[in-house]
Image (cartoon, rainbow, N blue to C red):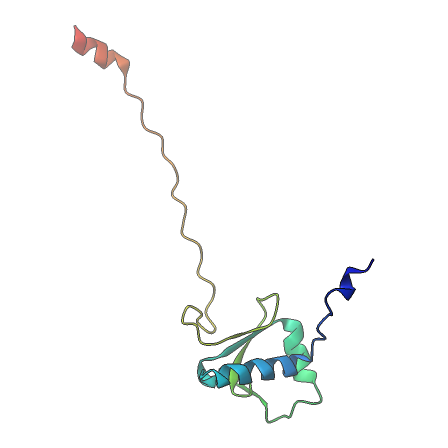
Length: 121
């Protein structure tokens, strides 16, 4: 009757716990923290800032933006918070590249048939 009993739901930890776990896993794989970027939803960023379990030393704010555990945080623009492990296609702080401009189709000019019939005579 209930399909939810087939697969137990994973209880999501706090945004801070999830981010810390992702950062530690990436670091264990050999990725440096300075090349990582946390791409978080606005809600998760707000939760991270207000979490009483997060030490104030873990979060820093500066002219280059917010950092959590030494990893840059990009707020918004995503549906689900993820950790970017240093993929070179993502440039921190850059606006998304616009799609290429569409080329407007042009019509060919009609060839006058009068000139064709005059040449045949």
